[in-house]
Amino acid sequence: LSHTPNGFASRFIFFLGYLTSYLLYTGFAAGITSLLLQQGENHHITISDLLDGMKFKTVTIMDNMLFIETFHGINNNSIAVANMDDLFSYLNQDNTIGIAPKICIEQYFASKFNYNMISLYSTTIVTMAHYSRGFVMLKNNTHKSTLNRGLLILQETGLLNNALHQSLLPTPNRIATSNYSSAGIEHVGSAILILLVGTLSATVFLVVELIVALYKSRCYGHSRIGEYF
Image 1 (cartoon, rainbow, N blue to C red):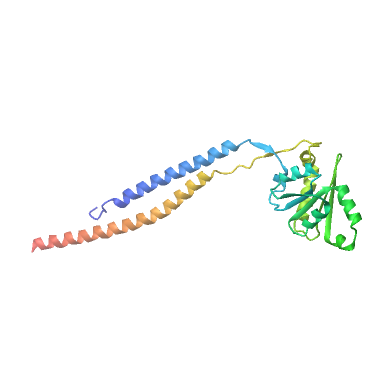
Image 2 (image 1 turned 135 degrees about the vertical axis):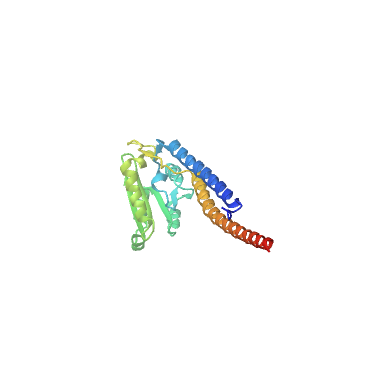
């Protein structure tokens, strides 16, 4: 064809297709590799797995060192206090939960019994074969229902026993969640972006080449007409 463009747009489109194919190939390869590496992996469920997302502070008395160590593993906001008075002084904050032996909480309520305490605080008691622990918080604490649900799960699965080194039930396993490689996702995203931008650029180049070719053909036609005259 006499009006065929010079070919830069065609070469650009070829290079664009090659680059996009390479990125797609490496992206899918990286993703499949990550899935294969994670296949079959599992690990023990921990308290953190079940209570993940609960952003709260735990307060307990210093004599209860086992609970301090156990619940320090949930988050880094565990606080140890000297007595029950100090423990209850922290409970005015919405995101704070007090933890102490059941007998300590019962004795404190008995010694400080009044209507305000009944209306302000809510308690949950977990009784197992070797221990009894109490959890106390404000009645309007936003974490109350979540904590109660989490304690039931921990108690039913035996995880609470296991955390207190009094394991009566085996810790179940959880299959690790398979996640697609972030590198693979980035490669695929880059390939799609390059394909879109490159296609637009190639279209612009192609239009420019067509205009230049048409202009040259017209100039060539006029020069040929001048030769005849």
